[in-house]
Amino acid sequence: MDTWLPTLITDTPQEGFELAITLARKGVGYVQSDPEVKQKLREVYENNADSLTFASQVIAVNFQTVAAANNYWR
Image (cartoon, rainbow, N blue to C red; front, side, top):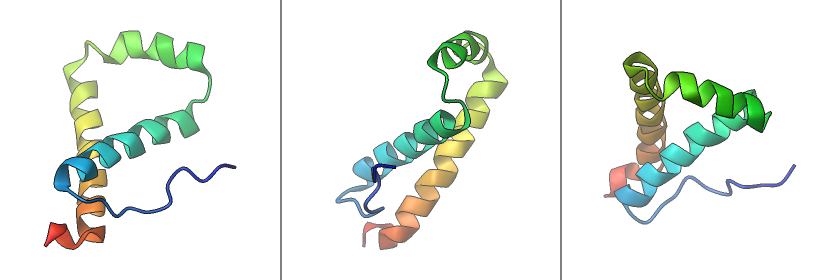
């Protein structure tokens, strides 16, 4: 398996947030690796407020992790 995440350290909070989004997206890819199934499911959740809220929560948790790893960019 290729190493795509060598570190959680980022230069800025913006980069940290983008990493949090990447972590969320990679997580989905690991759980559902079939692109056709992911596309079909996207049609369901992209218009569902609850699903979008849950996705935002996952990103927020990932951002907390990245922020802590970066000592909150102090």
